[in-house]
Image (tube, rainbow over all chains, first blue to last red; front, side, top):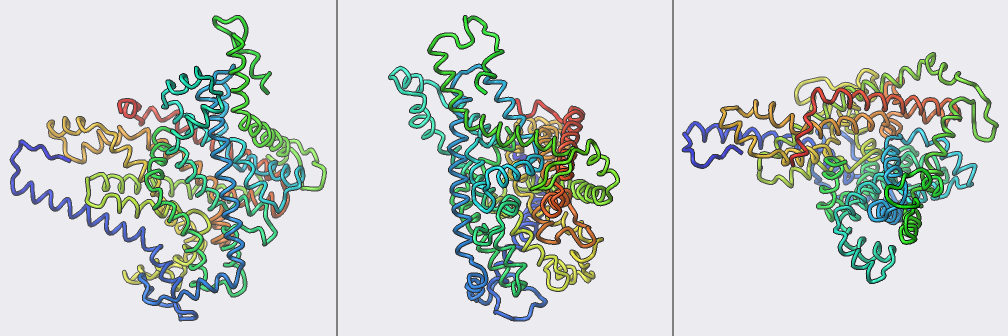
Length: 290
Length: 314
């Protein structure tokens, strides 16, 4: 940081710099170890010998590879069904969020209509409302009004109706896209929908990817909504499923629970590594400009 | 909806609200594009908000007609020990977990911003835990805090310290939850790194020429320049901790002795275990009020410590 090149540095300066680097790397490695330890420990524990006594010292690197624990998770709970339910719910919700958020964002960013700014301010202010405030009437609406208890409806339909935060992010992104292209398309007689579909959406792929990833994580990990709406065990999402495993008879075992947890978080971790760039960019945009 | 929104706008130069037929067409198409949100706003937000407000003045459980109670749900809150208790649990958690999380995130961000070798690997290591929310965290940490086999007590035993019964002793449950929350600071770290990178280097160079040491530079340049981002993280952090649910539901079920009875868990039980949906709605409105008051206070007092030029210059 302080490398001002025209200055000649004394031996003392170099010694101080080395000491400082040692402290920085020492702290980073030490803290990094603390942050990564829960992962290593869960993975190692998930591969323990079945029925081996728990004990000190705990192991942090796998020495046994007993995949049997993973198979046992499938035997104890309908894991494949839970997994499929989670995939269905998450896929539909992500699709709905992308579709509706991009449509609405296009309207706010590109089209002029009376009350546009007022409505946008209204949209922004809805982000202030915490979920618990609408939770109970929504439950009554879905369950008593629409008769959709024990369906995926309450989980997958709301994203189709314009999640405010994603609309906000996409609208900001659309505003940065040059209007020359759509002006030209307009002169050629292209409809607004074609401009949205063939010009704006392809250009917005990075922003859409970011929203898709965060929507995936939120839906995959969501616990409260499925807990409220799903009581039929065949409809459980994985989030409910691994909690169910933990509470069932014979599910109290460390290795089993860790195997379940590892399989539950694996898709999120894989997705992160596939799309790291979008994730980091997304957090930065939401954090700095949000 | 479209009619209502169209009415009161004052046209500047144009004859009608919509102006030319072309503009009128564009307006109609515009409303069509935003219609998913308009419908969602009415059906899933405005409607439920009004309903929730009305419900909060009634006794209501599904299948029965609501009974008008006036303000008594709200007066009941103030004689409800569990309400006070859950509010205290949540406030203590917020009071420790949010500031500690910010300090640790800032420390990590400063470390990672030193042009260290392997910065991306470290950033990934610190960020990954924040990907894992709720259920998985609760299941893994229930074991990590296990009094006999958990790794925390193992490390304490290495230091010769007696390990507490984290999730079995009401005294130690809150510290356990706070510690656990710190594992998830990665998102804030990423935000802070970006903010640190946005501080103009000329400022540091000028300060160094003036003989300011690294502590002084941090205190007088870095902190003020990134203070808007700190404020943002503080507000979103508080909003988040006041809605803590899954970890306490799964890991401790609110126990032991209600030591982890978070506000939202208590609200959930009122609504969906005891079907006291009127009272639960009142609790939800009070939660909203708390979040609102916290946000307003932080924003109002922010000009005392937040330096707003920082981001504008970027």
